[in-house]
Figure 1 (cartoon, one colour):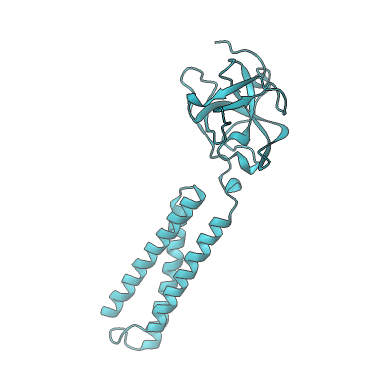
Figure 2 (tube, one colour; figure 1 turned 180 degrees about the vertical axis):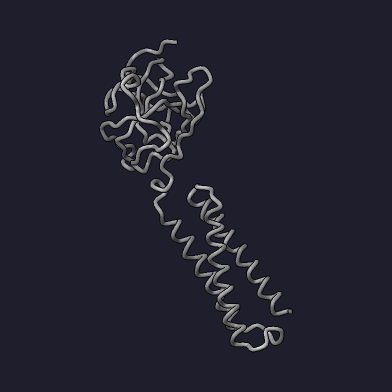
Length: 223
């Protein structure tokens, strides 16, 4: 009986290892999902089950005698290698590509419902502002967003434009329609200022701008 209890404890421990791997993977990728934990827990548990069958077949009476030390080390080693491999894998996945679209979420601005997406801004200028342009291309600024209104700013949609680089490290050709704080008019912001804009990919949460929305660019805001 002690032998079976030992295997049961080992299987339970393997599930915990799988859950731990899942938590680490979720933290690294910022994509919370119990799929990681369940899949990895099942994988490691299967390895434990296979090792249990192997040891019982080779050990004669399953009710007597200690569990093979070699078998325990094999299971422990396999779990450890799996942990290292999975953590290394998710760590090496490009952060931007893996997290594209997480800068924004649907949350309409209370007084301006067309600004339906709240996006986290991560690259403010030294004067705590972000430039707003009258066209989706580098050029003269037509306004700005101010950080005093919060690290999260509101946008309506997105559109393709000319590529723009920031600090020589991030580059994108995707822009987003917003309402400038000063002066209050419609303009576009390059997504390099988004929290996850460094990937160069379009934000997956923002919808594409339609003709009516594109016509607002550069025009003053009217209630």
